[in-house]
Amino acid sequence: MPHLRILLIALLVFSLQAARLRAQAPDPLPETCYLFSSFRDNGEDGLHLAWSTDGLKWEALKQDQSYLRPSVGKEKLMRDPCVTQGPDGTFYMVWTDSWTDRTIGFASSKDLINWSEERALPVMEQEPTARNCWAPEVDWDAQRKEFVIFWSTTIPGRFPATEGTSESSYNHRIYCTTTRDFRTFAPTRLFFDPGFNCIDATLLPLDGKYALFFKDERKFPNPMKNLRLAVADDIEGPYAVDPRPLNPPDSWTEGPTSIRLGADTVVYFDCYMKHRYGAVRTRDFKTWEDISSQLVMPEGMRHGTVFAVPRAIVQNLLVSHPAEVAHPPAP
Image (cartoon, rainbow, N blue to C red; front, top):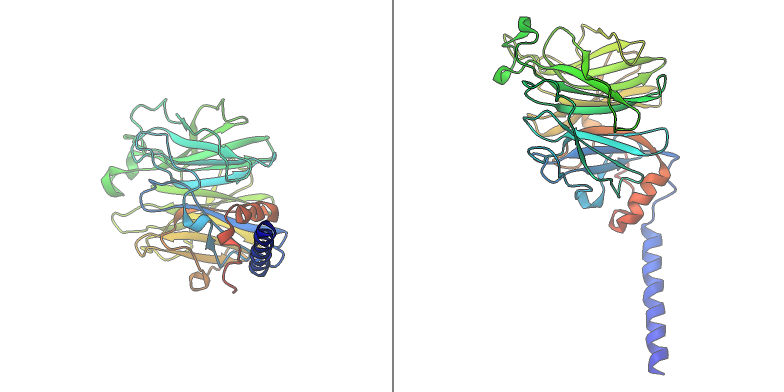
């Protein structure tokens, strides 16, 4: 009888827990959900993920703990993590592994939970004076069936006409390489030069064209520090720079990332001087509406990448951390 009583109690506890989980379970997720990679502080603890169903209200996953801690690079940081899903369903991530080095971090995952061994990719090894490799991004080039990786670098003595326009003698341009297997890489080359100091480039395929959002990094003689747009017919360029900034000069924003939400194109950005995120949206790429007041973002979130995923990916992330079984705040 004591054993029967213990069994009945166990069954009762199990039933109560199951009922509680059913009550917490979200409504069926939409077919497409959204994830946002980012980092905290200086990037010491690695990859953070947030999720959303509408692209406006975001909630941290895993109680805002790291999914992958950095282990490569001179300073072993994981800043500016960029995640893209390849045609085989694998997620590929690159990141800034150091403030002053010629490598970027790389890892891959099938589910965003279990990651491959991290590697430092020596993308600027052929440039011994290169000062840095910042904010790398990776995108799939469907036309050429390869990945393009691009990042910001200052090489002293290059582009002398624009020297002295930023802090600490930085004079960045965007460089790139391509790969099909993340083992062999094409020689690094100049990817984008708008004619002035720039960083934080990000790509968005758009109706047969490519939109390249980037930060105008000029500070002298007049601060810019805002976001710009360039457009090309081919992912490799050439890119034509739109003379109109997305936000006002001296707005001190960086780390743009963009996505299509229905008929809208939304560009998110890190308002790094105000320690918060902002966003603008457009339908015609001529007028930009500031929708920053509509955003709900995890506290401390910094420069990352937004990307769409099938709902099964988010469901798996939620199941892996049951305390997260709830929709982000309703609009």
